Length: 260
Image (tube, rainbow, N blue to C red; front, side, top):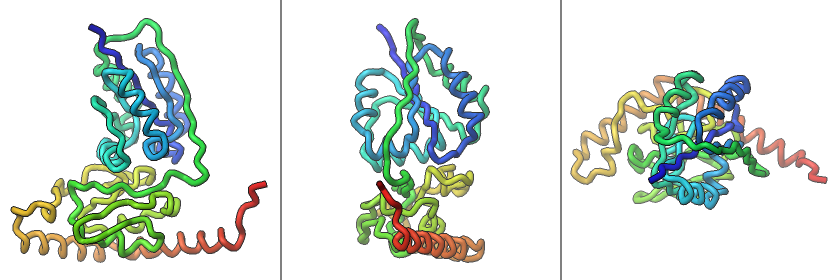
């Protein structure tokens, strides 16, 4: 019985890793003995090309993914309705070329004699920059939805969704900086932090979604987290980022690009 594996290599349109590292990874992956799909941007594919990803899942027993933080990819797939039955993510933000190649190779149970390397692009008129909600941490406080002025979120006390992902403004992670639970992720954010998908240092799940949790403890922790946001200057940074995004929007409306 064969165990066919493929590798998805995110070429990260956001430039999270350098072009040199991308090229080194590409060359290091080619001799691994699996079919390789180099995607221009996994964030865009998971939002707009789910059928392609689901087709891969049907054609292969296992999908290995070289991309950014596993937490970011897992929650992005869940949010966008991408259902892969057997996959594993390898973090090229932090691992070096040799390490990630060795880690990927160790997960390949059976090499193929004949393989191919396919490069796939996606044509997006807007950048695939949008927030991902880590629902294992979200307490449904609604802070992100109240802070966002671009209509990205749909919120009530029982539900928070990213209703209009492409309404989010490129390079604006402001709403996520105000989240007291570190539940908002921007996978394309250059900084290496919980906001870009790293595991939060507190490693806590959402007490607010656990009916058996102590309500007073949960509220106290949330209030402390909000105070920390102010103390650390994150709220001020978020205000500056939101202001910059609004200015860019205003300028784009004044000077629309000529599509001709």
